[in-house]
Image (tube, rainbow, N blue to C red; front, side, top):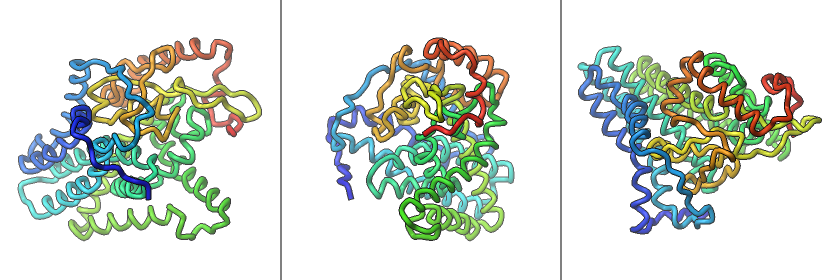
Length: 380
């Protein structure tokens, strides 16, 4: 196993601590459960609205760490992602125990509490899983699998690594939102297409290795075992109602994830070079956001242009880009995700930006219609 290098230097913590801000959600979620009433919605209100205000207060950050920094200097950053899975597990199933044995939360308060849990496990948990699935150590990949299983979306790992990163910003990628496509058309399409594309990608990997579908190395089998195990645990704690609450938070988490996916590549595409071949992925093929506070909360996920350009680069080393290198979002993900739920408003805001992006990078392309469908030749 690779060296985890998890002993941080003292001087590192000044830079690291802002990226631990998400951990404040754990005491908040428990306090809201104890207080009941409208307090059960405290966590998503803070995650969405407070960090939107903090983005205005703290502004943009264009500072870049040295991308050649050795992994041994990143220990404090890596602990921030590694510790999330056990604490999320304790919170989800601990709160299931709490609501199953507490009489002071009515049905709607319980629903609101698990809605808040879903916002947390989707906004933070899946994001941390995304970071760890790109890393090389077994412990980080296992933490990624556990986090995804807690939201019943384990196949996201296979789809993300084997499909999305390969075909991003092409019609072959289900997760690239098409120009003019509303989130409410995008969401059901992605749920269906990503599930089957993940299975297809893993089948192809197994075939190339000369293995059958039921070979122990097939991660899809691990996904099923983990997800069924968590559903059974929820049922054992709270019966049918407990399993439904667990499934509800999972749905909310996936909704949060796909809202972000929708924003990250909306309307962008790589140039089709002919014969099913597309240009290489460049920073221009993802929307970039340099908003300081929401990048603390989302561990630099908004530096998405660099993530697709260098997928295995750890989050503290992700680079931000100038507007001439990558398209820029006017707001951080919290505001953009909320805007995406109002299609007319989102299109009115984003479509002119996509049009400017097209003129800036691809003035030679006159007809963009083929790029908005899945009928173009598959990229190689």
